[in-house]
Amino acid sequence: QVQLVQSGAEVKKPGASVKVSCKASGYTASNYFIHWVRLAPGQGLEWMAIINPGGGATGYAQRFQGRLTVTRDTSTSTVYMDLGSLRPEDTAFYYCAYSSGYYVFNTWGQGTLVSVSS
Amino acid sequence: DIQMTQSPSSLSASVGDRVTITCRAGQSIANYVNWYQHQPGKAPKVLISSTSILESGVPSRFSGSGSGTDFTLTISNLQPEDFATYYCQQSYSTPITFGQGTRLDIK
Image (cartoon, rainbow over all chains, first blue to last red; front, side):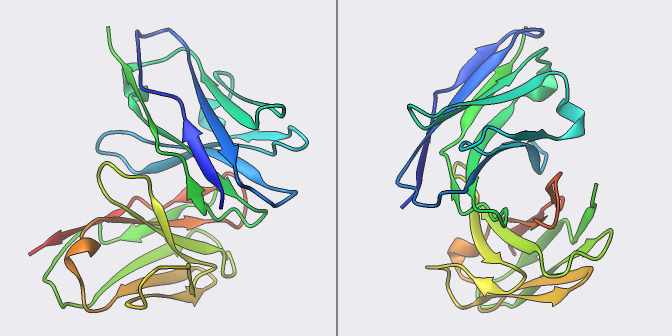
């Protein structure tokens, strides 16, 4: 059974960057994907990015282009989300989620709260 | 981007009721719709995939239907643990998009 474990909560000032990790275990699919989804207070779920940990290919939502980077470390089965130029409206729970090629988010990490405040 | 328009945005119901949530896609997406439940303090959980496939462990009171652009999630015989926020999601193409969410409250 796939498990995703994320890094802990972060508090950042506007303009800073944050890097959240997501460590995967228990997966058997050779071709799988890790997505990043966030949930801001009073808002709905918002998809941010996708990475294929095997090959490293990535895709990003247009609104985050230029300040979001997703990478992976295959030796530790860990995916990283790096969001820069933080604004107060980036305050949210950030989740990683696992899918096969059908992009159904079968497994989620526990979420990481990122708070942005001066 | 494929817009997913979900309604209603909120809904009040009682234990034992039957409720329906709808989602309309901005273009035809075949059956590539999934439904999630989110409870405060927890990660979202997939309930239904590919419009109507009940995920393992999900009670049979949850069901999904539709095709093309119009999709529904139905919850029969509401239980106390069902009061949560529900989201549709299209997995037809990236960028993946979600509906705005439906908050289901106890009447």
